[in-house]
Amino acid sequence: MKKIIVIALLILPSVLFAKKQPMAEFLEYDLENGLHVIIYHDVNEPNVVVGTKYHVGAKNEEADRTGFAHFFEHLLFHGTKNIPQGEFENTVMNAGGYCNAYTSYDVTYYYQLLPAHEYKLGLWVESERMLHPIITEEGINREREIVKEEKRMRYEGKPLGNSYYDMMGAMFTYETYGHNMIGSMDDLDASSIKDFKGFFEKYYVPNNACLVVAGNVDILETKKWIEYYFKDIPKGKEVKRPKDFGGPSGKEKIIEKTEKGLKKTAVSLNYYAVPETHSDAPIMNVIAAILSGDNTYSYFDKDILVDSDTIIQHVSATTELWEKVGVFRIKGKLKVEGQEQHLISKVEEQLERLKNEPVDDYVLQQVINSFEVGYTDFYFHAESLADMITNYHHFWGDANEFNNVIEKYTSITAKDIQRVAKKYFNKDNRVSIIYHPEK
Image (cartoon, helix red, strand yellow):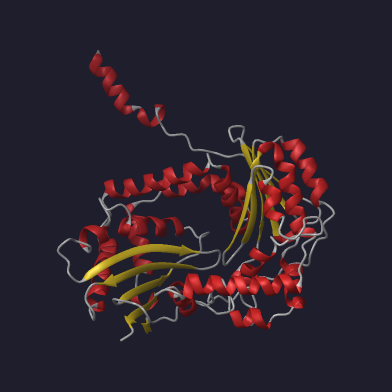
């Protein structure tokens, strides 16, 4: 009798013990001025995140006016009609919270994390930023110098500091994804206050924004205060989106550069991939983890970066997936000068392995499990969840699409890995950049 019970339990676990897909229920609606609103009520979250994500980033800038989106990330903390210069962050900190922002190629996001009962302060701050910012010559001039110093420290002051933008510039049009997100300092110097105000009026408008409130808030009360603070902000003109992003030329592009301060040769193999909304995007992410994830199964760690190798110092794979374009990027460094072809051939062997050999079931499951755990964690962290669901609104057109992301990973098969590897990992779909030390 005991054996029968054991057998029954072995047969039924997929029914009895199946993992429940996490779900987050959001309230979504639009104000008359076009502002999209997402409210997520989480009774277990003691705080609240109030943020505004504008659908504008570096790819929206004009070719001779680059750096504006990043510049505004700084500029819109300066002050407003009702928040004195320099008091923006203090206003939030004095209520027990903090504020931050970031810029990407696709969006600019401003947000506050506050005690839940201070959500109205967060709404007021974001409405002030949208309706009453103070943009002055003095503020612009001060910010120019701050941005210049940031560029020197982050990009120009270290070897390979600009390598990411070397890659993007070689693969995509300068007017969109092909320039540094921090922009050209010449462009910022040549820009007038009229240019800056024009950029603000074009993009920082309700109909180009998504307001998110996530945390332990009362939904009906929150809706009332959102209406109060935002309904009278004028709607802007329809935003025109760029369409020409560049792409593969049909043959491999090889670039060789000399880099000051570099000690050893570095290699960057960059394959045109897909935007993050494409159905192949999760498969690309899984492939990157198979190649250079956990060192207990990583192809690169187990078959390239072995202890006995005296030539290759480092090799790794990452995905760089944006709203409209994507790159599968493999970076490597050498211990021995002049051996870049050895590294490239070793990498290509592993890519051919992906094409021709099904990934071991255990390895694939380990990788998928890691993504499942990572995405599940978002449901228990309001700050991260707010960031994710506003992206899903802007890029997918539906914040609730986030609830389907785990299933997209758990359904990936070994055949999917082979199909994607065969489709994208070819020399005619690649831009290779070799960096040599300056002699």
